[in-house]
Image 1 (cartoon, rainbow, N blue to C red):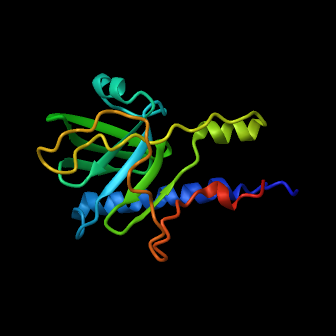
Image 2 (cartoon, helix red, strand yellow):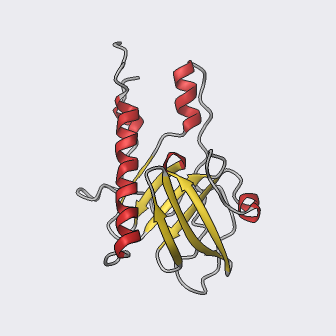
Length: 180
């Protein structure tokens, strides 16, 4: 098998993170258009993630936030985003580098994708077995005012990302395109 010196997998992930950056930048400037809203899962232990100790205690590995009704002061730069959210009626500020994002989903159009975890990539590069990625927990931020927060659990999101054109419901995974 030929060695991939170009590292198309890394380039593809960077391009998809650019999609997240672009849609969040537009939302920060213009608000959310139509029924669009975003479910963003990120690794809470990734470098540069900032959240309160209370939230880090509830979500020690991964967290899914929803940008729909109750968020404010969304700011985006080249490296990540910051946003104000309400968790159980308590306002919090969360900062997430784009490298920490593990999944992005827009339920309004059934479009989303998942990223390979950094642990898996690093292990593959070193030839060691990869740790199994932890599935994303349910959304931590509430989607509707006065809705109860779900208890933290380690289950995949209820709505899997779908291919927007075909509606196939297939999760787009970058490692699918790699030669093994």
